[in-house]
Length: 199
Length: 146
Image (tube, rainbow over all chains, first blue to last red; front, top):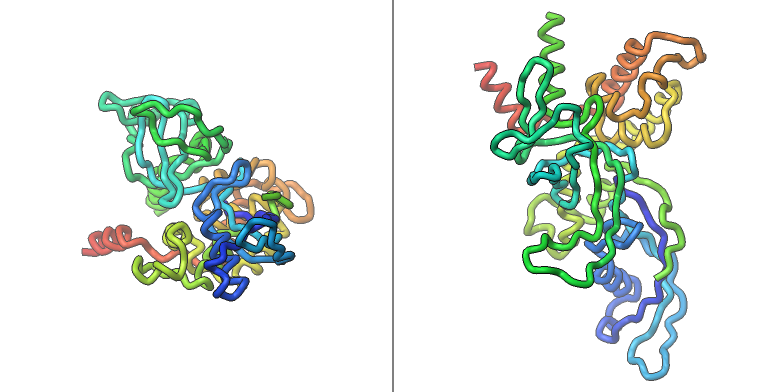
């Protein structure tokens, strides 16, 4: 779910930070630059993990700040394909389900990656019809376990039309097709059923 | 900005939680402000609801050592540590090609895959600490007792 990325950056240090110790100032500046932002193909930056080295400090002509070459590691949220995650259902439409991890919301589970037999109910919610004709609804705020099937980094749109959903730079496509995937309640109930049968 | 190494190592949920704790993250939203950023605070709160919340470094070392007998890839181990499967269905979701992985024992002889999965689950149960019961589940359990 999380991984580290090693990055080198030429960091201009604004003069108003000169009064602070160098490492503190660099860290604050890095946090301002990267925290809570998506870097294409790297993932969502959660935190600055550590600073490996600081070099330079040269002042370029005509600038009021010193520039340091800093190499550091960022703690990124970047699930690998095939990783299992647990989230909450935050919405649905005719394409599929939207899932939220509280700190990351741009996850969708398209209809073709759901268990066989999942369709939309009369009120628009998705439901799974079982062999016994039970209707299992996938409801809002239910906890759902899914497999990461791919992660897309979309290019920044040139034009944003009115009424478009907010732009999501990183989008995870999840799948709930398979054993043990889907609502946590389905499989927990299953377990209790087995135990009852054993008794 | 130059990316020297896109993937300089994966972290388990526990390691992230441990790191955020050492930074001073707390559940109290006011206590968090100023010490850690909002993004870190949210991740911390999410991780507290996962099985990582009461794992220790020792329990994870122990798990890695004892899982050597099972033919698991690192990614599978990561899934298992992060989510701590408690039933066979969980294990099948978390481990790729679970059936094929588990039809041989540590000496390479064929064995029953269901028994082997159960053996693995027992080991997980023994080594990794169980997640604390959730508030709702507790309320339900109390209601059951009454």
